[in-house]
Image (cartoon, rainbow, N blue to C red; front, side):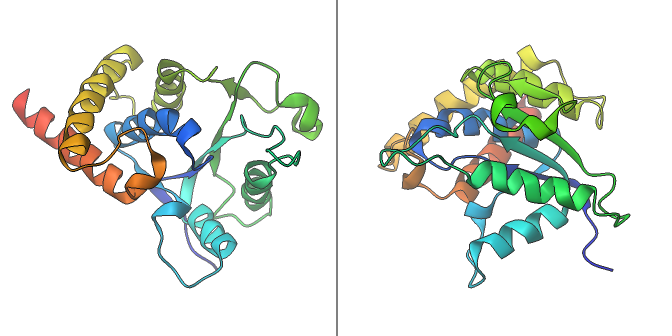
Length: 208
């Protein structure tokens, strides 16, 4: 029958580099603060090929966030196809006819409005969300999308203010430990996820 998707898991398909890291941090914060568990291939240390790991995470997640804002040519003049390719795999699971994935839901980001449509014309009728490379836009889109699953989630402005406080505290911790908080490759993503969870728990208790 295959692996059943977890109703609490959110698969995240996005660039893993310094340029996107400033958006990935508030994205992760919003997912976690909203009561969901982010799933990223970069958190897995496995002997399996990376694509197999990605597909396993998709199959195990009822929800997915796909960022298609970075498809421009790289330094060698080649387009980046990984994110659209993974989005296509996930969408294929949804429409495969297998009932455990039929209810999969996706939030798809593009950089600016209507930017992705010309390169993915077959997605007509599929709603995309433009983040314009802005953290507060990421928080608002993710929060509003997840609020349909968890109506108790605070408003996006409140979450963004909390994220800014976390970001300030996280930067202090990183610098004390000799890490650059703006460098993607200096700490594993699973360490960042742990720090977000610890900060949220501590601050919920302090505000109780």
